[in-house]
Image (cartoon, rainbow, N blue to C red; front, side, top):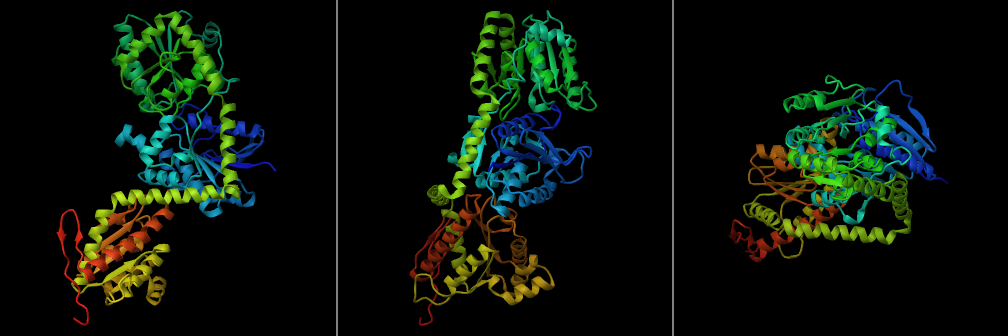
Length: 625
């Protein structure tokens, strides 16, 4: 039986025309990968958002490949920055397909597709692989306030990193960023680069290419091709052109291909208008030609016609255009960032320069344009490197191998590996918690002990697994933890009172049930503990708000980012993990440590030390004293 694979690409359809603000490398990646998988015998459905009412919902696109348009919000174009609100609907509609005709595996592309894959895995148990194409934390480092994606992106990406069965990094930098910024497990990351289609991108005689494009056969030509957005660094290329012409005395024409229409329209593509103004300000307006958006069948002629291709983005997860240019035999000068520094070999297939450095770029342009022998060496090396390492055939085979690894493991043949991974993950979370949580745990234990000493009580709440842990914690204090001789200590698990829990939830609101109990039972001098793996449990948040109104101290025991609850807590203990299982495991361990610390301090005169205070807490008097 053929494997059935679902490729999820919520905003980037393989059917889209490239060069617009929301269409580029991801569209190519998804389309080419789908084709290769289809040729290898997989049945592939590409799920993308339905944004054009003229399109049928299901299109048979190539051998074994269908494109399925998923209803998610209005059937119209919506910027990808505004799509998160429609992902629940997207998920439900993909699940409709998956339930009627099961898939063995999903491959998510971009973070919102990863969220969909996480939800499908939780509902149907189908494993998934993720290619991020771009990481939110890296984007923020470079774009800052210009980044318009919702703030939830970072937390969602962290969840995906924890839950994905495998992550495809497109280059070593991508892998390093995942580990450094998202604490990804290196054992679940596989580097598989993007590729080129040699039938689509291959050398064409430069003079023939110029004749077909009606370009001057005698001019030196610099090509910049891609999406028209500021981070692509086209401004740097224009500034370098001005230096090249004025200081280096080397005249060249800069061709800029890309935009939202076939003609260069500053109204449809405001970035073009901005760049035109920069070219005029730099005094090189007559040497810069904007071409507009072109079909992929024409691009090999532009690459082949150019003497040099330039790609100088501020950052770039991979970047396919340098590969396409190299496949056509054109030397590349690119930014020393991300995937470009992986695909372009400095001094062999072109040059690498720091982003936003027009002077350095101009110097390298001068070398390539004025040294024919160097140009020929770069040309030969570029063609050889791409054909050896970067074809979609190789990429498809590597991805298929990864799929089989995931499917084999999930079929049960890798059960020992699952056990090993679970223990390894637990040990890593324990190690990080040991490093980070000693002081927060000591402060929490001190606060609990002081409440008992002053005759107060502890109210503790949580939902689901956290509810059972809250009841376990209460049982340890009301009963005993280690010392059989001590008196019972007043801890109430709010979820244990099923009468008020069901009555208030039924008649009013479950969101306010814990707040109502805090209002009824709590008084100044008491303490409220809230357990939440996400920190976003509405009923726990409202309980903390009620506690604050009554001057009651609060302690939150959390995971992930801490959510909204972290801002309402007087003290918090945040488990350094985004894996719900690991967080819950550490929560019970933290509760046991708190039990021992408090019991020891109250009954054995052991001090609880913090960084700011070293003291012996008052001893609770026994009934016989």
